[in-house]
Picture 1 (cartoon, helix red, strand yellow):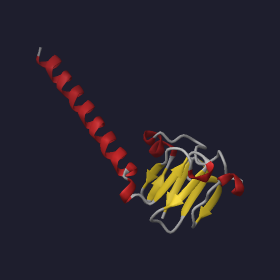
Picture 2 (cartoon, rainbow, N blue to C red):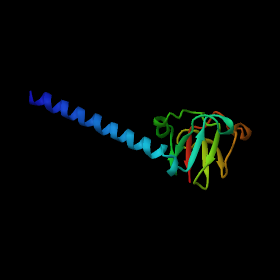
Picture 3 (cartoon, rainbow, N blue to C red):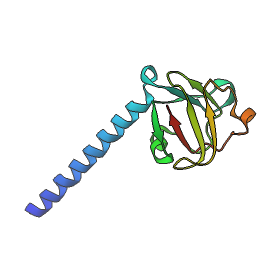
Length: 120
């Protein structure tokens, strides 16, 4: 019986830790006031933006925010000097550096391919 209770306690502890990690991670990237960049799914800053802070973001980092590959149509730079977009995960493939807002990534030939991002 002790082994069963111990297993349940460990399992519940893991669930609580993972839930807290998700909440903390989500809040870190979605707080508009502390964000460096707003990623919009459509051109002309339309749609619900995803807010991220300065840092490096792989596809796995962006997934909890509801971001999936290619869903960046426009970008507002709120508090960053540059945003680097990459075609492939882990900062590989074609690359586009933005230092100002971009109302339509299609104009840059970079629509529908962003997979990883560096905000500096």
